[in-house]
Length: 94
Image (cartoon, rainbow, N blue to C red; front, side, top):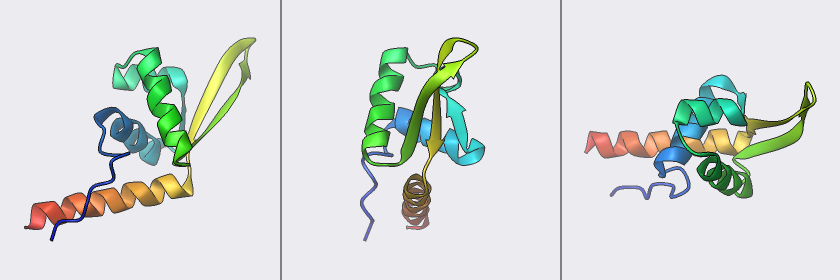
């Protein structure tokens, strides 16, 4: 029987964000916007959904007198990603 895929991570943009954070640990808003080619509004919405699930932590501050947002994957986010990947592997085996 197939495992249900995590609906939070099954979104293309959220999966791209989490995948990038898995390999890089943390990033900032502008870098995520650039690598995903998404709009600021769409990135903001998806980050809020990931933060609500506690898959990421968001820190807002300033860097050289400009607003700067740092996004970091949490342990819960890493575990959710690993479970998601394991579920996909099960789909491929059957």
